[in-house]
Image 1: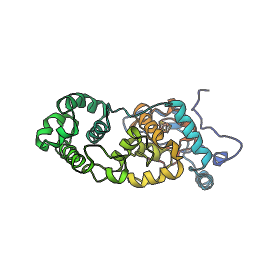
Image 2: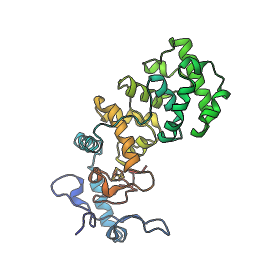
Image 3: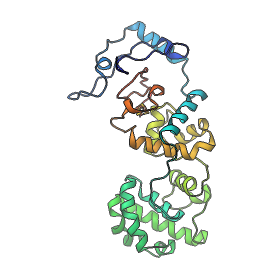
Image 4: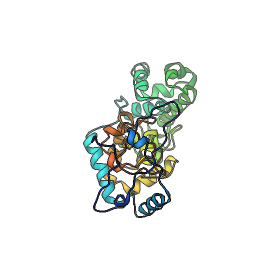
Length: 284
Ligand code: SF4
């Protein structure tokens, strides 16, 4: 029987000992969905099954170190040496590219930045601009007025307060216009190789919630949750791995769960394929 047609029931220990096939989620009207037929049409669980499920959920700890270690091992196998996809040659270029990447894609930003840095090669060149002068060059990345203000404002402050060098400390980076913890973590982790925090973008948010590493939706709180369970030496790579996982497999709308190395560890409510019990609380 092909894998995935019947929810797996691992035998020896843990909450899945008592798992019964839970009621599959109904695919959206007009869509066949991508769950296997057996999971789409399974019987509605009765009161006993619901009690059973509640009992098994009680003993389950998604933050158990062994589970975290397995997740990290799976990510290492899937994405052994990934890094930031934004093209850059300096801390300043990475900072600008990260600011431009908000609400945009790295591919889109990488189309814009080579010409941008050819036109304005140094941070001093940016500091000499008015935001309106920069707007046409970054228009295609979206939200270009705010981004132009942030980039020019950051350049002016770096020139005036930091001698033209991007600072390598979190507190100093956070004083730059348009720079919050996510951008600061990208620059610190990718350029300075400092694991001060964990980058939390849309991919990290979604996958952390699907994997039940956090229940929060607020990026600073998610970051704090992740910092408690992920070993610090993994903080930089872990964020890159989740970002790549979010692009390749754990897509926002239709995650490719049947191909996912983490499938047997993931109980996400919106999985498209499952061999384990689904947890309604594990949603993006
Ligand atoms: S099993 Fe699916 S939802 Fe879970 S991490 Fe993998 S791709 Fe994402």
